[in-house]
Length: 368
Picture (cartoon, rainbow, N blue to C red):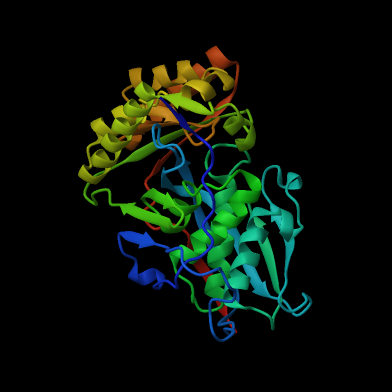
């Protein structure tokens, strides 16, 4: 028996949500009536003249959880600054500048920019028609890195637009706005943008209707991600094209059991179990690892250096290992860098960061 890996059909409707401060473990967007904008009955007034939002990096898939598991990583991410701009046509948004490495590769046309697409979607949801917005994007994440670069831009933009108008939308709408952006760039998958907005570990239970489940990693447990990024770009579309269209029953059963074990390990704070499951993918990683020079040696080096587990972060090329100690993480990172250089002939940099439990957030504002 074989199973198809075709992308799921996108959801088209959802109910209004509760505010961010009233999040529950399970978020459900029900398919009911055809989608109609705006979602708010009255166009909201801006409460700030300008805002600045941050969205963290994310690790998607987590080994066996292809397209349905992801988590947020603290300390690194993208920033979006947004302001009311009388020079911009009411109801529209303009991207004034983009900063960061390879910023010149990104379009300033909001219709072709991850941040712009998500921002426009939130404006539609809110029914913004009376003011124009100017957006500035600071890329803290490299492009095509496997750290959710496009999702971070989309998440930060979605939160910024929502907050400048008083935070009328909840996480379900913001995730759907981010998905609109992801759909254009890398495919309709929420395992980056959902944790980027919500923080922590997120399970995508269903795409139609969209159902998101927060997996609570115990507050008293330490979890560090060792992120090692080689000087190599792995475009998501190219890496998704390498995947098999169908899989056999044995691999299906194996990956399902490992994904279940990973979820249980997250909830229990069991890093040994988490690392073991993280390293166990038999469907996606075997197809992608050969496309990233040195990846198999890097994984072996991480585990030999004491990591609980290691896999490809998202579509790659970043390798991610997990540990419970920051100093140990630095040692693991050094060994992974050496393996990339020795076996893959690639220079790499390592970053050791905690789990981000908060997600995209407002970090600055100026009242009107």
